[in-house]
Length: 496
Image (tube, rainbow, N blue to C red; front, side, top):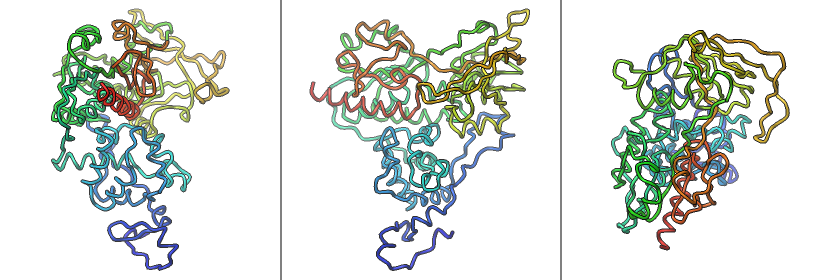
């Protein structure tokens, strides 16, 4: 199909169904016939030996063609699927028109992190899931690639050197403390600062960015991109204090009572790793994915000659879990020189919560997938180190409360897999420190802070969002909560 062809049909009905891009008119049928644009990537033989980004991004030509696939639906179901409500049809139309500046301006009305979200958010289960193009072609993988277009225009802005900080209103004299520097906290800091309030961000680590820095590997999300977003906050006038552990360096109540903060947002994340509570989890060679990835990502342990932290060297590694963190740990183990990396998951690939793209990349990089299997115990050698794991095989039963079919043990199916390292990636809980040091702050049985629909906690002037409320979630869901919380904080301060 020639996407530049101009239709000459003069019927009113046809005209009403056509959309103009670059003075050329395409019918919905023609748009549906444009094939999805594949994202260029590093060759898998090369990328397993470096930490550079795997996905290389669209070219300008690819982005424009992909944007022309959008039908510009009047009901815009994609917006409803976006946790921060980006005006998706209009930013895509701007790309198709060759107006990248307008496209990024539209996105930034709703999101300060387009370069991040375009890379790591699960668009296929959010904005792209209800896309009319995907539904028309009966394949969600053929929906308009909204995330890739968002990444393209965010990278265009950065590469063009026109990255500008949002404007702020006149100073109000009100002070807001933001605990943590992950996606929810960045969103709150930006939206509250826009209204003219003074904002100070407190980060426990020595670097800002939260899970985007310590959890997501460089090959999936380059750290310089996260740092640029944090720099945008600084340009807006947000103050940032690192190595500041709220609950230890300073209690939350003291921030308000003694330091004069009028409101507080808690976005401290979910950094307490879960374990399986099986025999052998205390052996040398067993790690949480949190520790493994933090050493590798934040502290750059892969650069052994320059890093200030060691990392365990293993030949045969097992990853227990099936989410994005498990994929990140498995792909990191490959890059750290493991000869074999085995990913063990007790359901099938259909139920796996990891992004389809991450699963595909892991397979290309040689990760060995074990579906319908799980560890029963970890076996030691004579020195107390990991020698092997004993696994069980499973079958799928009836759906559980999550809607996924429940894995059922096949009795007598035990087998051993020889290894020298095991990485547990089955999720995280909230760190209890803030709860323990903040009387009256209500949490649920998992330690997540309880909030209302406006992200307000049980304490006056205290709001919370992101993983510390949701449990381990996605960047964009955390940002969505950040937008809700910021709106509520701004209204609270206006009334006060």
